[in-house]
Image (cartoon, rainbow, N blue to C red; front, top):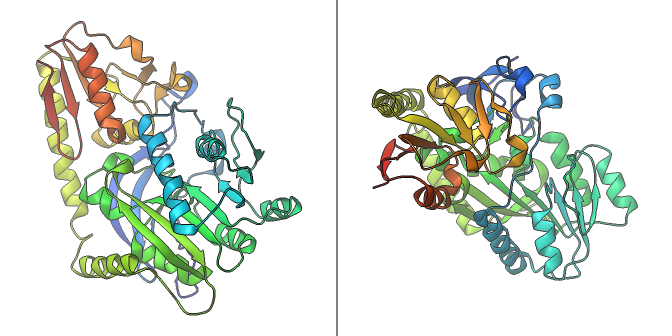
Length: 411
């Protein structure tokens, strides 16, 4: 079913007033599936659309509720890149917001608890998390086991916990409609308190040709323009703003401050990006995306086909969302890629949806034989390449599909 409602829902927005900017064909939700869904995983047409009035960018397909309910979640081992990012995040928040060890900090979507643990190790004790999924890790603080919904603010108030800082890492991009989320968060925040969000920066992903990052589970994609619309709708100012081009393909690290008065007081860095974006968008930035992605798809497939013809056994590194998007977009399946390996034990024995490709432990990838490894874990490319160089033979090849296909020899 096509989504015709703007995710931000500004009062000026008109239902259905969207322009399609990118299509990647039929994609699954992305997380690995069991044997029972090896061949029959749900797929939907992936189209990215932009609201012509507020600039929000969202997928225009609505995933059936029953598919979302049975979508599996996984605990991923902490990579050093994630740990380093969170350590840097804490340091920056201390500098930008003035939080102290006594500050009340709420993390929405705290996942396996890494960030909360890092805060705790630094001496913070007034910590609260909201997380719907169960993880085997033990939390050092209380966790509300639920989605952040209309009842959550009352649960938090009942604990006498009005936060000075709300943290949402990789959260708001997954929420199809942001209106109720921001209404509920705003109800907990006093003027002058802070909210930190880390979200994917769409121009960063498009400029870097990181098409592997697109999936139905990421409902919203962000620009400075759309962040400004959120601030207008929910009375925030952009207090601090950074675009990290390296982390996860391109992220916006945004510290919002609940507005003290009616006058907007956005940071100078944010206003500069907003002006630059406006010029780019008005000059047809989104105009030829489909044509460019079709050409890139052809070049990647030619690289894969050349190694198949040379007799290489193709193996994937990474079995998560990005592998599913890349393989389904390219039209590759178990006839082309024999299996994939992943460090996450919760994915082992499952399959990449829409492909029939089984996911195995890293130990299944040996240096023997004529092997070509196509890397899907591009966020951690440096770590992955170092590992592959330590185990593969000199005859092996490594394929890096994006941003442009590369074939690397191990000799």
